[in-house]
Image (cartoon, rainbow, N blue to C red):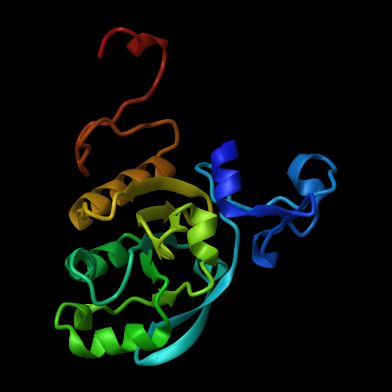
Length: 228
């Protein structure tokens, strides 16, 4: 992690780092072998994501949801800036339209913003696009998830558009983060999920550019060097 990212996420008071409790290792020896400062936990490609619990609006109820509840499934965390905005409902409607396909692939979706669960409910009740949503809408009011996944915008108190695909073992496999002026493509996300699932189930194979199910894959080796 870069020094800039660290200074963006916590600050120094009386020569001590003040870090929110939800971002601390349970054991300081987990970070670097023994130091005097608890280091925050961050999601990183190829590593297990930190666990946390947040409120969610789902099926007309307010629920507590832990990321670890989804072990054994592919998990898509879909961060967006705010409810009652402009690009966000177009993205979330696309996600809702593709939710059944994601579930067929063994996946689940959690949308995430810094809005309260009550704002989520109000938006779900009033927007025709958002009424389509069947997946949980997480309320990251304490900015825990935004900090963990690196999407938080301190100057605005909001999240960037971030998509994170986590495998059934809790390992982060795919990351996409956009400027908030640029919307995402749910169908492309489904394609990436299909590719990640194929690679997991067919060890040693990799998916080339624009791979679709049924296309040829590659098996890296010396025999392919210089021939592609």
